[in-house]
Amino acid sequence: MKEETRKRREKRAFFKELIKKEGLKTIPDVTRFLKEISGTILEEMLEAELDEELGYEKYDRTEEKDNYRNGYTSKKVKGTLGEM
Image 1: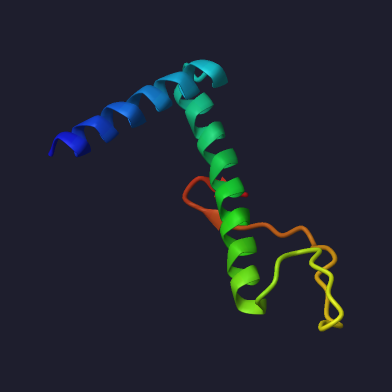
Image 2: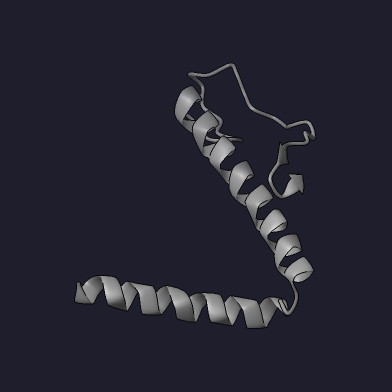
């Protein structure tokens, strides 16, 4: 229980610092930031999923492979925070 409380305090301190650093003062500020960070998280998750599926990371070069990932196209996703 103490470990959970400590982690909760650490997360709260982290978020307080993040709010201060990002200058989040209004609901539209928070919404904009959540939309931005959600898009970043989604991109990273998709990259990790593709790494796992293919068995190698982007830009990996070896003699054993003749298939390389070399780019992406822009895509839009609609969610509860709007279009990302």
